[in-house]
Image 1: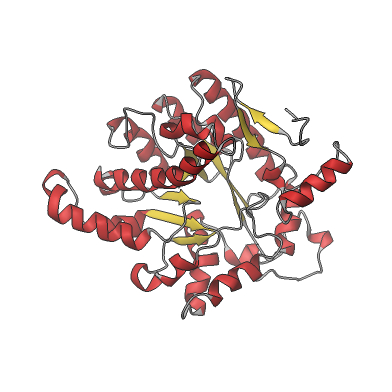
Image 2: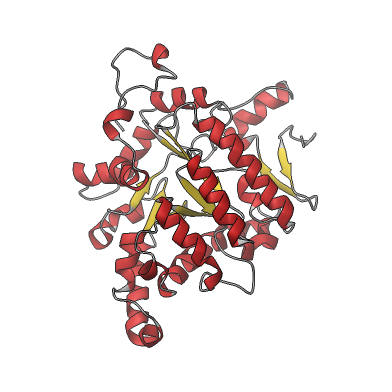
Length: 365
C-alpha cells in the first residue's frame, strides 16, 4: 500500500496493521529527507537502490563497493514470521523462497540465499529446508523467538536442528522477527512506546534465544549446527560469555548435559553479525574474532553502502590495535568459512557483470 501522506510503500499484514516501510528498505546511501524530497516532487518516482529486486544491479552495486559476495536476508519476510495464520505464513515462505531461488541463480557463487522457514509444523519446515537446499539456497532463517508459552528448550525443534546440521545450512535468528514480540513490534516506528521497547527487546530476544540453545544442549547434541545471531551486534558477547559460564558453574550445571563450558559452544556454534560496533571491536581482546561477521546491510537505509570501506575504517579508528589477520576474519574469512564461499573465485567479477567492469579488476573487501 502507498501512503498518500508521504508516498512511501508499506507492507500491510493480514490484520491490517502497517508493517515494513518498503521505500526506506531500499534507501541505501540516502537520507530519509533525500528520499522524501524526490517523492514530494514526483510521488511515482522509483526511489532507491535496485539490488533488492534485481540481482544484476545488486552484483554491480556490491562490486563497486568492494564487496565480493553477499548473504541475502529477507526484509518484509521478517514480518511473515509473525503471522498468526499458519497456512498463510507457510504459503508466504514458499513464495519468497521460490523467488529467492530464481534471484540467486543469476550467480549462486556470490549470492548466498537464506530460506525463510515457518516452524509451526516441524515436518513441513524440514521438508522446505531440504527442498530449498537442493535448489541452491545455503542457509535458513526462522523466528528469533518462539511464541509465548514456548521456547528453544522444546524438543519439537530437534528434527530441524538435525536436518540443518546434516545439510550444512546455518540457521539465522534476525532481530524484528520474534513471535514473543509480535504484538509490540506492530507499533515499531508507529509510536514512542512501541518503538522504544521494540528497539531494546528485539535484541534482548536474540540474546535470550542464543542462551536457550546453549543451555538446552542443542549444540552438544548437534555439534555441526551453526546459528547466526543477525544484526544484534557484537558488543554483548563478552558479557554474555561471563554470565553464561558463571551461571552455569553456580546454578544450573547440575541440570545440564554439557561437556564444554557454555562460552565454548557460543564461540564454536554461534556467529554474530554487526554493521557498526566500535564497542564490540574494542572487546576483541576478551572475545576473540573467530565468530563475528561484518555486515553492509545493502540495500536498506541502515546500510553503509556505497562507502563500506570508509565505514569499516571509521570503526577501526576507534579501536586499539586490530591487525590485518583479525580484519580479514571480520570481513571475509569467517563468513566464507560459514557458507563455504571460495574467496579466490569471488575475487573476480561476477560473469553477470563482467562486461560492465574492467577486465581483471578486483574488489578487495
